[in-house]
Image (cartoon, rainbow, N blue to C red; front, top):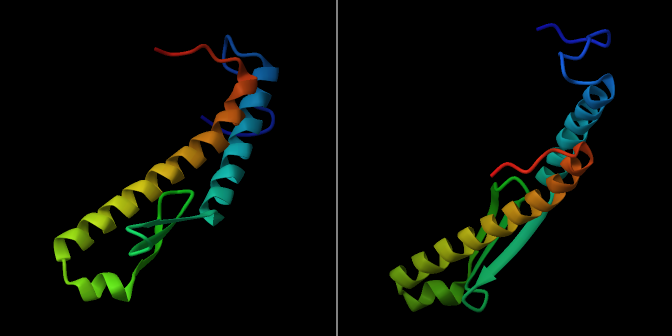
Length: 113
C-alpha cells in the first residue's frame, strides 16, 4: 500500500482518526527516542552491585564494588548481579509503559480482554 499525504482512509475509518493515528505514530517514535536517552540506576546489596539501563532496557553500565569482590562469594555476587539487572529492567519497562500509555488515550480504543 502506498503511503502519502493524499491517501484516503480505509473503509470504516474517518480522515480524523487517520490523522490521530499518524500523529500518535510520530509521538511514539519521539517517545522511544527519548526513552533511549533516559538512564535508570539501580544498586543492590548495599551498593555492592550497581547497574545503569536506559528506557529501552539496554544495559549501559555494570559496577561491582571492590568490597563485594574481596568477599569471594561468587554465588552471592552472581545473585546480586541478576537481582540488579532484573530490577533495572522492570523499572525501565514501567517507565516505558508510563510514557507510551498516554499516547493512545486520545484514540478512545476499546479495551481488549
